[in-house]
Image (tube, rainbow, N blue to C red; front, top):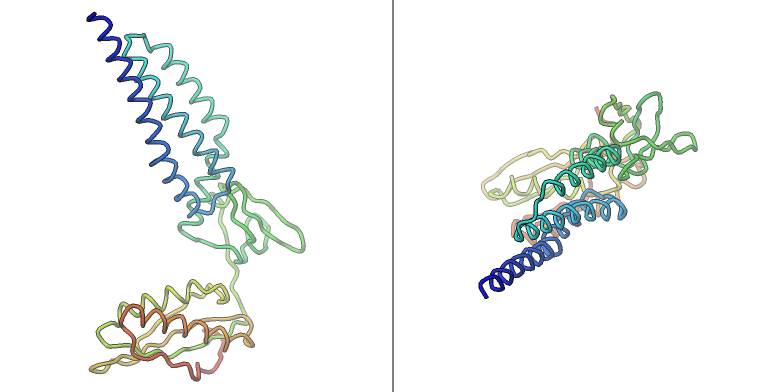
Length: 262
């Protein structure tokens, strides 16, 4: 009877370990991988691969713990798993390296989609930063450069000429100048019609007792679109100010004379 009870307890423990591993994978690990890699704009194939690899690792650990409950020797299992893991790492080394390189590129943004770059004698516009390759369009041809190469090699971003600078006056309540600056820059940097670099700049023109005047400087390639782009940005800023309760006034009138940067 004692032997049966012991077996039942061990079996129950093994089942509990397996259930915990399943819930951990489904409710925690997979959602975290999904959010993180989606934010890094990884492809569905890459997300699926990483999730599968980590799921296998977690389930294997659960199996090892469950087996250990019955006193089975695990040395052979550990050796087999170690050889398998080393083989997978070596076999998918390039893929893993490029996945990590994509995360670094998208997180630290040394360049982004739409930028012109030069690397290894190739000069073109970045059309996509994929999970493994970055696509560069040059003279009607598409070049696929491994992400890991972009981290190891020197990348040059050519100077941009012919830009039009627009200055947008914005008034806010004086106590909220710093918060207003952050909101203005966030909205400007999120506008895909602006040319970056140069990055948008916010300068404080004057501060009075109740209000402060700020000036947002942005750059566009096509001066004909300057007025419409400025209008959209100012309206977005106005809405954000009202939502945050720091609204004073956003000037939707003249946005300044276009000029070349520098």
